[in-house]
Structures are given as C-alpha cells and as structure tokens.
Picture 1 (cartoon, helix red, strand yellow):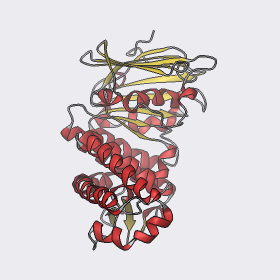
Picture 2 (cartoon, helix red, strand yellow):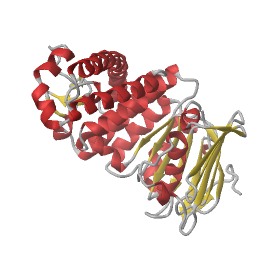
Picture 3 (spheres, rainbow, N blue to C red):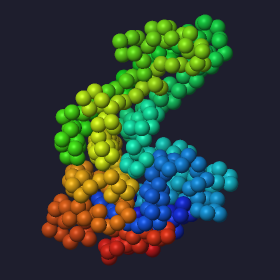
Picture 4 (cartoon, one colour):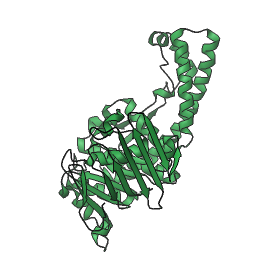
Length: 376
C-alpha cells in the first residue's frame, strides 16, 4: 500500500498530526529531537504493533497522557487504525471501521521496512538481530510461516521443560521427535526464503556497492551441524543440554552470515559501505515482499545523511527510483536531499513539487514546504 494520509494523536513528542503523503517520495527535515523519528515510529508501529526504538509501549504516549492513536488511509481509501490505552492496557485495532483482535490483521494490509542508525545491529547485535530481519520478511512472503513458527515454539517450550525437569524417557522422546520434525519443516521454508533473498541481493549491490557486488557471499546456518541429522546432534549433546537446561540445537538457533572473502562483512567495510549494504539487503527483501504480497512495502529511512557521502547518496537515489514503492526519508539538513530531488527519474520533465512532498519538522509540528501538500 501507499499511505495517502497519516494521522496521529498523543504519539511521542508529535503534535496532533494529519498530513497527506506522496505515493512515492516524502522528505521530513528537522533538527535532532524535533519529531522526525517519532513520525517514522508511528508508521512502523502500525505495521508491526511495536516500536523500533523501545520495548516499553508506555514511552510511546505523549508526556502526561495515557493513550495514543495512529491511523492511515491508503490511495484506495482503506483505513487502518490502532489505538492504545495505557491505563487499561486495551489495544483497539480497526480496519475500515471494523474491530479486529490480532495485530497481524493490520500487517496483512501494510508492510513496513525500515533502515535506521540502529539497523547496524544486524552486524553487531548477534544472531538475534539477523533472525528478526529474516522473520520480518518471511511473515509477508511465507504467509503460513507465522503459524508454523508459533507451533514450533510451543513444542520447543515443552521439550525444554522435559530437559529442566528430567521427565521420563517416553515423554522426552515424544517431544524430541516432534521438535525435530518441526525444526526440519521450519528450516526448509526458511532456506527457500533466504535462497530467494540471496538471488535478489546482487542486483541491488550492483547499484549501491558495485565494487564488492561479486565478492559478497551469504551463509545460512540452519541451527544444527550441516552434516548431521538433528536427532543425532541432539543425542550427541544430551549431557550438555542437561547442564544448560534447554535445547542447544534446532530451528530457533538459525543464523545468517554476510561474508567477503570468507571474512565477516562488517570487518571489511567502512561504516558508509555497511549502511549501503543494509539498504541493498532491505531493498532485496522489499522486492520479495512486493512480489508475493498484495501490498507494496513502505520503506522508512531515518537520517539519510548519516554515514553517506554525496556519491553514495547519488547511488541510493538511483536505487530508490528503481525500487517502485513509497519511501519516507528523514534528514537533519535539506542539502543532503539534493541527489534525490534532482534525480532525472524524479523530475522527468514535470514540476519537481509534483514528484515528492517535503515537510519541515519543528517541536513536534509538521509543516509542508510546497503547496502540493495539504496539512490540517
């Protein structure tokens, strides 16, 4: 989907917001702390039911308020809304005015991808961060994966309980057998997804990092030794599991590694190159989502000027023109946006103001820069 109108109430440090967005390019410029990231957070929250900045939902409400609202309307007048009352803990989810019980119902209609300064955790935050990235894409691309993953986690908890409480062999063997079968099922679906992601990635690396595009390899680790059956790996590690109190192998232990000449990618690239790689990976995932989902992803990029020089921003501008989805970008200074505004694919013989919307953000208020944007 493309967000045509965004409305927020009592969200973070934003004043009450009702703004019309461009279906392709949107720029939000303002100082640190002005509310730019809060705006991205509001859209992300609607798509994921959580923040990319905090795990504490009470931090999302404006100071001295105990509720907040985020809603969007797309170009086809589909209305999605989410409100949270912190005192009662009630979350109200609405799609075209009808109440729904699950946040996943919203996510079926809006797919949000984001790149922020925190996205570098993909390299330095350990396997957990890489698992989160893959699971985000799989939710939209492999529609049954969420149900499969919930069932796997249910069985994992049962098997871990057997290990901790040293239950009888028959019970332990039952849960182990089920655990192995589900691990293999999950790993097969995940491997197919990652294989498709790897196939899509070189196109975006050629646009953003052509000097290393043919040197990058992506390694998928399924969660147990590649040359062993899971049941054998678990049998061999039985004493270690008893000592640790949990399953040390299985689909929950998967990882994805990004390498250049068999070395960790982050050890070979500068900070700017790492950001371009993150963008290429995100674009590849966005394309997979768009290919199988009925809605195109919305791409959020926070602080576009950080780590990227003028040449890198030129390359990014070219890549965005090919991506074909709605993009929302924040920046501290308007000058860093010139490669995107002046791109021939953006202006293309038409008035540039019709090709993007720009806003200034100050003290939580959002003001349009050109007359093509209406604000209330």
